[in-house]
Length: 298
Image 1 (cartoon, rainbow, N blue to C red):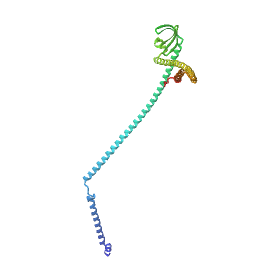
Image 2 (tube, one colour):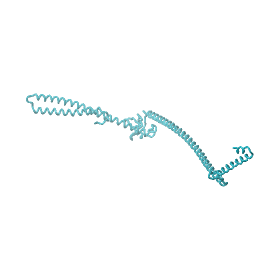
Image 3 (cartoon, one colour):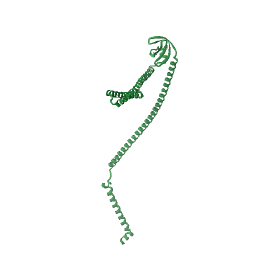
Image 4 (tube, helix red, strand yellow):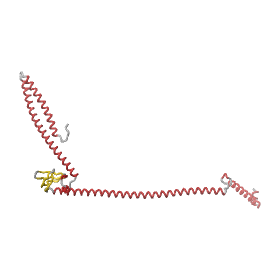
């Protein structure tokens, strides 16, 4: 301890301490230099070429990143432009759709208005035509040819869609529209479609009338037959009752006549058979008369 105290208090101690500190500093410098310049620890010195190469690689990477960023930016601008174009097309389509809907509504209004006008024109033409035809009733035609025969002073009794009806000294006649003079056809405005429809209605009406007449005649015949069957049934029933009474009377006799009994039995059997036939026919006729028209018989 005395030695250290002496070093601290004497001038020689300061030199010694300085020398020791210098040794420590030099040793630390050497130790750090070993790490700084050892390639194992990444501390090797780099040449100018290696530094330039490293910087060149870094610049290349940065250029590549810049190019990628530029491409991404250009794609973004392209997509943005396409989006704008798409939005413009959609807006244009919506505008066209609105115009088409407007045109469709306009066309429907025109169709309705046109149909209404056509109906009004048809009604007017029909009304005017009916008025002209009705006003012709009673008009005298100085000369007209009917079925190749010239008729004078014929009076129009009716004008139909198929022609005119006239009366004259010898009776009445119906003149088809296609046999009338051009002047009368134009005046009464005959049309082929109207004529065909009218004639078809006439045929149906006449057919119904004929069916009604035939049905009436047939029904009358059936009614007469029913009356006859009822009268005949009454007659046969009375005859059967008399035969049955006669048979009872014969059987009460002590010695009945065999031939009379046999004959009476035959009459009773025939009467019953005829009554059966009369009843079946009478029932069938009554059923047919009460059955609706057009229904098929069983």
